[in-house]
Image (cartoon, rainbow, N blue to C red):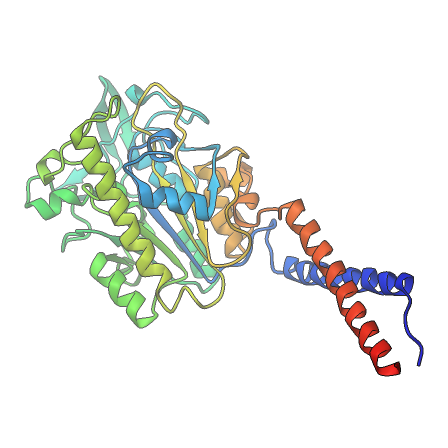
Length: 395
């Protein structure tokens, strides 16, 4: 019986390795057919929006151990910026690609907070009415709380996809203003952190308005497996790191960090842990491709840039990647659109670049070499064992 010599064994092993690598490449090529701009098609995309803290205040902080664990385990964008100041325009941009004139003028690195306003929605008898005029910093600005433009809600409808926003401490009257004159629970909810309610397609459609729900519904949906395709989660102002003295969580001082700031950071870290743990342990997370985007609406108005953390928690693909490509709120919207196969982009997302490396990071070359080397060694060892067996049999 013919026995392979060492040269033949090595050649066969290399061929075997090539076959393994070729098969891997084939799988990747096949998967690419289901990508939009290189972004995977997701079954569930979830945004958890936190408040008013910059990148350096969160990443590396001893007061946010769980968030840093997420950053080290999953994929982190290390050059990501909020759109502007203050809160509202950043929320609007994330779901529609525009500030609609609210807030400070757009700045790709750091807007001037003194030029912005957080006055909208314009209030009439406790409900939305607009456009009207709000005064900020001594200047008159137009604020429109009934926006007649498309948002991601309309895009999802065209794709037959579902959505909900989960708002902690949501008042019974969803269209109520930021009810700071009511009880503590209402103080903790801020309509400026609930951007969907600014769009007439949600305000005037009972079927869409019912998708604005509280945290009790989040627990029920995770338990029943009814999580929608797109979820936007906004904790209350004591749990999102914003702070609210009237709600029982005084604002903190960030430099140096005082006791109030530590409390805000720790409360937010615990909230993220509770939310992420609940989502990733649900049945929805184990089915299909899913991603959680954890980010902040803006920094704390400090002198630094408007850089904020963005962490992509996925149940598929490569993990543990830090991506340094520039991105902003418009980039995140485009990435979410791509993740649903939407290529007709909203507003500023049309000129943005998808955060492809965050959700489909390039594999580490040393890892690939290691896999190839292991395949070669496996082939050589396998053939060596067979050769020894055959020699023993012939003796």
